[in-house]
Image (cartoon, rainbow, N blue to C red; front, side, top):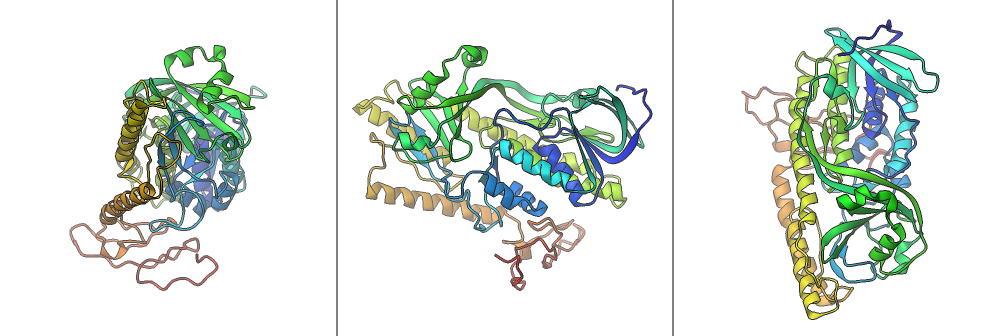
Length: 509
């Protein structure tokens, strides 16, 4: 490890390296608990190109805990914008499958959470997180401050940082250091931590462009995600960013990655739309799809979170949300250690609990990514012919079958650009209901939350409500006795457990 020649200029309980969503989230969580922290970020906080776009229900629960859920909802995709997924040959061509996701967006609670998945890109999410972090007295945000090196011992960590504007170097002593500085962080290498997995799955290029109300130029309607199919398969995707005028076109292939500056973006946009439309290209970004998990989540008093600990493809929208799961697990444990009530093995549980989750999520993201990449196509899939109709029908059925286990969906497979009529729609709804019912029955056996099976659980260390408050009484595993659910006493909670009086306060639904 590097040895600094500077005497510590100041002390902080926790030093956070990296000012992306995970670093800002950890700063907010610590500040919300009254724990002092300094966050250093070498950039100025601006984002030139859209990145993470989807927040799952658990991430929204954390935002609700921190008091920013409504702000995130208002800044993201409009509430009435559908989160549907379309597979098609072009926006003015043939529809192959349509997957509706009625459980996404809006603000009504679901059976398992007071929050719903939302779409708010980092373009707007990062400023919200940064403003919330700044509002907490115990949080010190230092933008344009570059982390350089650190050394640690049994008592803490001493880091050297540099003010980018002035060039001045300073040292910060911390009880703990958390690397939230992404996949290129030097901290894991300094600790001797290796990344396990596949460093290069696919080369990609994103094109960020502006076209107001793109749906006015075709008859497919609004959708959040579009997958375009031709004889070569699926190598183009279109993602809506704000539900108004901003979009991201994704291209898979080394040729696009290598020749990004030479590409005719207008021709590519015309290809997915099916005709020329007015547009403005804002920026482009080359990126590599990875499948990596750190073999350790830290050493001594230095810990990893977010992309510094795990990197996955964007298929499924897991990246930001997995990092926020790290924050939810690590924040209270760091607070416990700083306040002196955490045991000697508490921080070790961070890796034991989060690394298996990351392995599972990275594997699922890779499966999603490779499934569409390897999905069989047909030379005539985009043609208005009997062969084209058959190819689209077979692909639509295969897409529906592959998506069935995870969400309420419907898919159509037809030679026309629209659904095949009332009978087909009714049969599709019946299939979707059956899928949802089987999924919910399985979920009911698995889920252990304050809204479902709280009365029947056997826990050894208690369970938390969706708001983060302890709800269940503790008992040693040897007792094997069933535990009685205790009402959540948090002022933030809006989720009475079964058997407890429903709240009539202003926090009620």
